[in-house]
Image 1: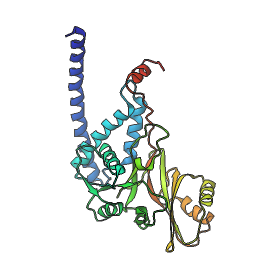
Image 2: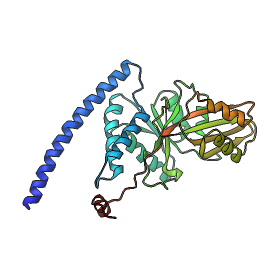
Image 3: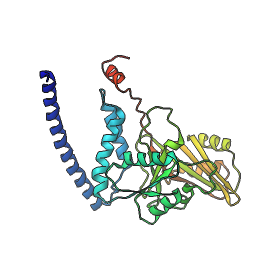
Image 4: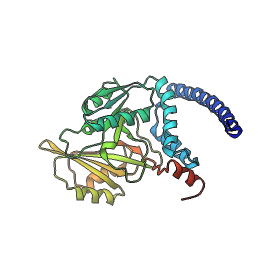
Length: 299
């Protein structure tokens, strides 16, 4: 064996031992923080805090290790300690076809490979499991336009303080800015407060008997500073529902909700925030030899 290879392997062995020692120290600290949170009534899971942590790590990261791998390593740490030790449960909507497998894999990447997960055959069953406190988190399909009985309509009547809310988006990051296939995305619903991370997207639900065009929704939302990224509508004789995904953090008591109602001349119905998610990082990784070349300053 080459003496150089042997020497490098020795250095790796030393680093492996140091990393394991640090991971054990980190796990001890996480458990202590969890205990303090429970004592002080602070929610154990804080997607906003986790998003800030991931952004900080990615800003610091250099070298050939893919940025996506960095995020997955830290998500595994979060799930394997804070989530597993607190007995939290996850239920994943696994529809028929390839998208079902995708949802399961995304949930494992986010919640860790060791956290127990259960399957639900449809989104409404997953939402019911969280409502009945049989599960802590529900992984749900991305909203589908034209769905006559969308799962998100059941969040409209939830208590703004401790009701179910959209809390995260899966996957946590995108490999490129063009990753927009709805079958490769999912949302996480839980009894969590939607808190700002510094860069967020929110979901606004509008429930009204009158017919409101999509163009008018976009224009009126833009007039109060909310850029609409997508609209999902559910039209039925019982009333029209619209779900707007907007670029900004919108709190449950945000005055812009009432302002939007007024601009749309909604005399009845509701305009509420159903939660949201931190803006996902775009990895943009080069892999293999391209990653090594990039690390050496070559294109």
